[in-house]
Amino acid sequence: MADVRLTAVTDERLDVAAHLAAVDDPAAGAVATFIGQVRDHDPDVAGTVTLLEYEAHPDAGTVLREIAERVAADHAVQVAVSHRSGSLRVGDLAVVVAVSSAHRAEAFEVCRALIETVKTDLPVWKRQTDDSGTAAWKGL
Image 1 (cartoon, helix red, strand yellow):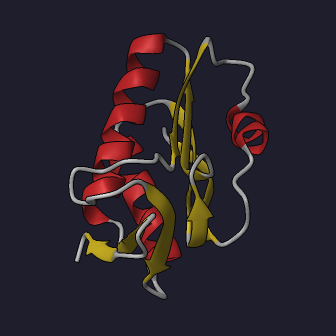
Image 2 (cartoon, helix red, strand yellow):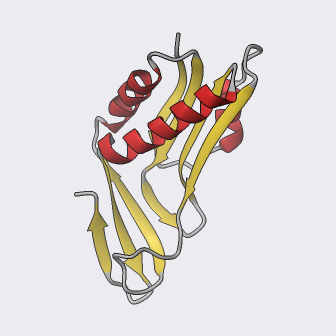
């Protein structure tokens, strides 16, 4: 039922249009998306966030595909999901999720479940650096 069409953990810029194209389907009446971008603040950082560095486990790409397949398994959806690794600045895209389905409720449900599971289960860790140069790891 589910069709996972694109998964990637990459140090390249994420392309929202490529994710939308990947889930394009003549049977789809809805596309739900989540776009996570680097923000300039975090409760765990004293100053203004200036840089995020994502470190990905070597198996992160495989794990991301497994997450997408598991979350979408019982749904008639098309899925595209990618997560960045490497250094990102404020405003850069860190994660993109696109889910298409015949109906909006299912697209939203799977999109939300997918990003929540990625946040908890994907072996990617981030180090945030603030404007004073202080760095702090999250997700360890």
